[in-house]
Length: 280
Image (tube, rainbow, N blue to C red):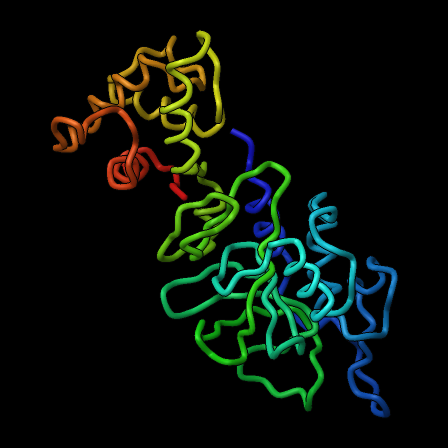
Protein backbone atom coordinates (compact mmCIF):
# COMPACT_ATOMS: atom_id res chain seq x y z
CA UNK A 1 0.00 0.00 0.00
CA UNK A 2 1.34 3.42 -0.89
CA UNK A 3 1.83 5.96 1.87
CA UNK A 4 -0.82 8.73 1.88
CA UNK A 5 0.43 12.19 0.93
CA UNK A 6 -0.45 13.66 4.32
CA UNK A 7 1.61 11.10 6.18
CA UNK A 8 4.58 11.50 3.85
CA UNK A 9 4.45 15.19 4.77
CA UNK A 10 4.13 14.79 8.52
CA UNK A 11 6.76 12.03 8.64
CA UNK A 12 9.15 14.42 6.91
CA UNK A 13 8.29 17.28 9.27
CA UNK A 14 9.00 14.99 12.21
CA UNK A 15 12.35 14.00 10.70
CA UNK A 16 13.67 17.58 10.96
CA UNK A 17 15.89 17.79 14.07
CA UNK A 18 14.65 20.18 16.74
CA UNK A 19 17.38 22.74 17.39
CA UNK A 20 18.51 26.30 16.74
CA UNK A 21 19.11 26.97 13.02
CA UNK A 22 19.87 30.71 13.01
CA UNK A 23 23.14 32.44 13.86
CA UNK A 24 23.64 34.88 16.72
CA UNK A 25 25.40 38.22 16.43
CA UNK A 26 25.90 40.60 19.32
CA UNK A 27 24.70 43.57 17.28
CA UNK A 28 21.54 42.10 15.76
CA UNK A 29 20.69 38.95 17.74
CA UNK A 30 19.37 36.01 15.75
CA UNK A 31 19.87 36.71 12.03
CA UNK A 32 17.07 34.71 10.30
CA UNK A 33 19.62 33.07 7.97
CA UNK A 34 18.84 29.36 7.68
CA UNK A 35 18.97 26.44 5.28
CA UNK A 36 15.20 26.79 4.96
CA UNK A 37 15.38 30.36 3.72
CA UNK A 38 18.14 29.36 1.33
CA UNK A 39 15.97 26.55 -0.08
CA UNK A 40 13.00 28.90 -0.46
CA UNK A 41 15.09 31.57 -2.17
CA UNK A 42 14.57 34.29 0.45
CA UNK A 43 16.87 34.44 3.44
CA UNK A 44 17.35 36.80 6.35
CA UNK A 45 13.59 37.28 6.89
CA UNK A 46 10.98 35.76 9.17
CA UNK A 47 10.75 32.15 8.00
CA UNK A 48 7.84 30.36 9.69
CA UNK A 49 5.72 30.27 6.49
CA UNK A 50 8.88 29.59 4.49
CA UNK A 51 9.53 26.48 6.61
CA UNK A 52 5.98 25.25 5.96
CA UNK A 53 6.40 25.62 2.18
CA UNK A 54 9.78 23.90 2.26
CA UNK A 55 8.22 20.87 3.95
CA UNK A 56 5.68 20.55 1.15
CA UNK A 57 8.34 21.07 -1.51
CA UNK A 58 10.63 18.45 0.04
CA UNK A 59 7.86 15.86 -0.30
CA UNK A 60 6.81 16.87 -3.83
CA UNK A 61 3.61 18.52 -2.62
CA UNK A 62 4.43 22.20 -3.22
CA UNK A 63 1.64 22.51 -5.81
CA UNK A 64 -1.05 22.22 -3.12
CA UNK A 65 0.09 25.28 -1.14
CA UNK A 66 0.86 28.81 -2.36
CA UNK A 67 4.50 29.89 -2.23
CA UNK A 68 4.34 32.79 0.20
CA UNK A 69 6.32 33.95 3.21
CA UNK A 70 3.23 35.56 4.72
CA UNK A 71 0.75 33.82 7.04
CA UNK A 72 -2.12 36.17 6.21
CA UNK A 73 -1.54 35.59 2.49
CA UNK A 74 -1.88 31.81 2.70
CA UNK A 75 -4.87 32.26 5.02
CA UNK A 76 -6.68 34.43 2.46
CA UNK A 77 -5.78 31.98 -0.31
CA UNK A 78 -7.12 29.05 1.71
CA UNK A 79 -10.39 30.83 2.38
CA UNK A 80 -10.81 31.64 -1.32
CA UNK A 81 -10.19 27.99 -2.21
CA UNK A 82 -12.60 26.57 0.39
CA UNK A 83 -9.72 25.05 2.34
CA UNK A 84 -10.06 26.95 5.62
CA UNK A 85 -11.28 25.27 8.81
CA UNK A 86 -11.86 26.04 12.47
CA UNK A 87 -10.78 22.49 13.25
CA UNK A 88 -7.29 20.95 13.23
CA UNK A 89 -6.27 18.20 10.83
CA UNK A 90 -2.91 16.51 10.42
CA UNK A 91 -0.74 18.34 7.89
CA UNK A 92 -2.75 21.56 8.14
CA UNK A 93 -1.01 24.93 8.44
CA UNK A 94 -2.16 26.70 11.59
CA UNK A 95 -2.51 30.48 11.75
CA UNK A 96 -1.42 31.72 15.15
CA UNK A 97 -2.20 35.22 16.38
CA UNK A 98 -4.13 36.29 13.28
CA UNK A 99 -1.09 36.15 11.03
CA UNK A 100 1.70 36.38 13.60
CA UNK A 101 3.08 32.86 13.20
CA UNK A 102 2.45 29.46 11.58
CA UNK A 103 3.38 25.84 12.20
CA UNK A 104 2.26 22.48 10.79
CA UNK A 105 -0.23 20.32 12.68
CA UNK A 106 1.26 16.98 13.69
CA UNK A 107 -1.57 15.83 15.98
CA UNK A 108 -4.58 16.78 18.03
CA UNK A 109 -6.98 15.61 20.70
CA UNK A 110 -10.18 17.04 22.15
CA UNK A 111 -8.44 19.94 23.88
CA UNK A 112 -4.98 20.33 22.34
CA UNK A 113 -3.39 20.84 18.93
CA UNK A 114 0.21 19.65 18.51
CA UNK A 115 2.38 21.51 16.02
CA UNK A 116 5.93 21.81 14.75
CA UNK A 117 7.43 24.73 12.92
CA UNK A 118 10.29 27.00 12.05
CA UNK A 119 11.25 30.47 13.25
CA UNK A 120 10.00 29.37 16.67
CA UNK A 121 11.51 28.81 20.08
CA UNK A 122 11.78 25.80 22.32
CA UNK A 123 8.81 25.48 24.68
CA UNK A 124 9.55 27.37 27.88
CA UNK A 125 12.46 29.35 26.40
CA UNK A 126 12.67 33.12 25.86
CA UNK A 127 14.08 34.77 22.76
CA UNK A 128 13.21 38.46 23.19
CA UNK A 129 10.70 38.33 20.36
CA UNK A 130 12.79 36.37 17.87
CA UNK A 131 12.33 32.77 16.83
CA UNK A 132 15.55 30.90 16.19
CA UNK A 133 14.92 27.26 15.30
CA UNK A 134 12.59 24.36 14.62
CA UNK A 135 10.58 23.20 17.61
CA UNK A 136 7.39 21.35 18.58
CA UNK A 137 4.60 22.85 20.67
CA UNK A 138 1.22 22.11 22.21
CA UNK A 139 -1.57 24.70 22.28
CA UNK A 140 -5.07 24.70 23.71
CA UNK A 141 -7.36 24.34 20.69
CA UNK A 142 -9.74 27.00 21.98
CA UNK A 143 -7.05 29.53 22.85
CA UNK A 144 -7.70 32.85 21.10
CA UNK A 145 -4.12 32.67 19.77
CA UNK A 146 -5.26 29.81 17.47
CA UNK A 147 -6.91 31.69 14.60
CA UNK A 148 -7.69 28.71 12.33
CA UNK A 149 -6.29 26.20 9.86
CA UNK A 150 -5.40 25.93 6.18
CA UNK A 151 -6.36 22.32 5.35
CA UNK A 152 -4.77 21.43 1.97
CA UNK A 153 -6.34 19.06 -0.52
CA UNK A 154 -3.72 16.39 -1.15
CA UNK A 155 -3.20 15.07 -4.71
CA UNK A 156 -4.00 11.45 -3.79
CA UNK A 157 -7.44 12.49 -2.50
CA UNK A 158 -6.88 10.92 0.92
CA UNK A 159 -8.20 13.00 3.81
CA UNK A 160 -5.81 13.11 6.77
CA UNK A 161 -6.96 12.58 10.37
CA UNK A 162 -9.33 15.49 10.97
CA UNK A 163 -11.39 16.91 13.83
CA UNK A 164 -13.70 18.68 11.37
CA UNK A 165 -17.16 17.04 11.48
CA UNK A 166 -17.83 18.32 7.96
CA UNK A 167 -14.39 18.16 6.37
CA UNK A 168 -14.93 18.84 2.63
CA UNK A 169 -12.17 16.35 1.81
CA UNK A 170 -14.49 13.54 2.91
CA UNK A 171 -12.81 12.24 6.04
CA UNK A 172 -14.77 11.01 9.04
CA UNK A 173 -14.02 13.12 12.16
CA UNK A 174 -11.55 11.66 14.65
CA UNK A 175 -11.34 12.45 18.35
CA UNK A 176 -7.54 12.38 18.34
CA UNK A 177 -4.41 11.45 16.41
CA UNK A 178 -0.79 11.67 17.53
CA UNK A 179 2.30 11.00 15.47
CA UNK A 180 4.83 8.48 16.70
CA UNK A 181 7.55 6.48 15.02
CA UNK A 182 5.43 3.37 15.53
CA UNK A 183 2.38 5.01 13.97
CA UNK A 184 4.45 6.15 11.00
CA UNK A 185 5.21 2.53 10.11
CA UNK A 186 1.60 1.32 10.12
CA UNK A 187 -0.66 1.09 7.05
CA UNK A 188 -3.56 3.55 7.13
CA UNK A 189 -7.10 2.89 5.90
CA UNK A 190 -9.80 5.49 5.31
CA UNK A 191 -13.14 4.32 6.71
CA UNK A 192 -14.95 6.52 4.19
CA UNK A 193 -13.02 4.93 1.31
CA UNK A 194 -13.69 1.38 2.48
CA UNK A 195 -17.42 2.06 2.92
CA UNK A 196 -17.60 3.60 -0.55
CA UNK A 197 -15.81 0.60 -2.05
CA UNK A 198 -18.08 -1.89 -0.26
CA UNK A 199 -21.11 -0.14 -1.77
CA UNK A 200 -19.62 0.36 -5.24
CA UNK A 201 -17.47 -2.63 -6.13
CA UNK A 202 -20.02 -5.49 -5.94
CA UNK A 203 -22.19 -3.91 -8.64
CA UNK A 204 -19.53 -3.41 -11.28
CA UNK A 205 -17.30 -5.62 -13.44
CA UNK A 206 -15.31 -8.40 -11.80
CA UNK A 207 -12.18 -7.01 -10.20
CA UNK A 208 -13.21 -3.34 -10.38
CA UNK A 209 -11.85 -1.42 -7.42
CA UNK A 210 -12.82 2.05 -6.22
CA UNK A 211 -10.17 2.31 -3.47
CA UNK A 212 -7.81 -0.59 -4.04
CA UNK A 213 -5.06 0.41 -1.59
CA UNK A 214 -7.42 0.75 1.38
CA UNK A 215 -9.34 -2.42 0.56
CA UNK A 216 -6.20 -4.54 0.19
CA UNK A 217 -5.27 -3.83 3.80
CA UNK A 218 -8.72 -4.92 4.99
CA UNK A 219 -8.73 -8.01 2.78
CA UNK A 220 -5.30 -9.07 4.04
CA UNK A 221 -6.68 -8.98 7.58
CA UNK A 222 -9.77 -10.97 6.55
CA UNK A 223 -7.51 -13.58 4.92
CA UNK A 224 -5.53 -13.82 8.16
CA UNK A 225 -8.81 -14.33 10.02
CA UNK A 226 -9.64 -17.26 7.74
CA UNK A 227 -12.72 -15.49 6.43
CA UNK A 228 -11.55 -14.77 2.88
CA UNK A 229 -9.60 -16.94 0.47
CA UNK A 230 -6.34 -15.36 -0.65
CA UNK A 231 -7.26 -15.42 -4.35
CA UNK A 232 -10.10 -12.97 -3.59
CA UNK A 233 -7.73 -10.50 -1.94
CA UNK A 234 -7.32 -8.23 -4.96
CA UNK A 235 -8.30 -4.76 -3.72
CA UNK A 236 -11.87 -5.00 -4.96
CA UNK A 237 -14.53 -5.00 -2.23
CA UNK A 238 -16.68 -7.41 -4.23
CA UNK A 239 -19.30 -9.89 -3.10
CA UNK A 240 -16.72 -12.32 -1.64
CA UNK A 241 -15.18 -9.57 0.48
CA UNK A 242 -18.62 -8.30 1.55
CA UNK A 243 -19.50 -11.83 2.70
CA UNK A 244 -16.18 -12.17 4.51
CA UNK A 245 -16.62 -8.83 6.25
CA UNK A 246 -20.16 -9.79 7.23
CA UNK A 247 -18.67 -12.88 8.87
CA UNK A 248 -16.22 -10.64 10.72
CA UNK A 249 -19.09 -8.44 11.95
CA UNK A 250 -20.90 -11.53 13.26
CA UNK A 251 -17.68 -12.57 14.97
CA UNK A 252 -17.70 -9.14 16.63
CA UNK A 253 -21.24 -9.80 17.92
CA UNK A 254 -23.31 -7.98 15.33
CA UNK A 255 -26.47 -9.57 13.97
CA UNK A 256 -29.04 -9.00 11.24
CA UNK A 257 -28.69 -5.78 9.28
CA UNK A 258 -25.78 -4.75 11.53
CA UNK A 259 -23.77 -7.55 9.89
CA UNK A 260 -24.41 -6.49 6.29
CA UNK A 261 -20.76 -6.54 5.20
CA UNK A 262 -20.50 -2.73 5.08
CA UNK A 263 -17.69 -1.70 7.48
CA UNK A 264 -18.41 0.51 10.48
CA UNK A 265 -15.91 2.29 12.69
CA UNK A 266 -16.25 -0.17 15.58
CA UNK A 267 -15.87 -3.39 13.58
CA UNK A 268 -13.12 -1.98 11.37
CA UNK A 269 -11.35 -0.58 14.42
CA UNK A 270 -11.34 -4.03 16.02
CA UNK A 271 -9.94 -5.56 12.84
CA UNK A 272 -7.28 -2.83 12.70
CA UNK A 273 -6.26 -3.31 16.31
CA UNK A 274 -5.82 -7.04 15.77
CA UNK A 275 -3.91 -6.71 12.48
CA UNK A 276 -1.86 -3.58 13.14
CA UNK A 277 -3.25 -0.93 10.81
CA UNK A 278 -4.83 2.46 11.44
CA UNK A 279 -8.32 3.67 10.59
CA UNK A 280 -9.05 7.29 9.68
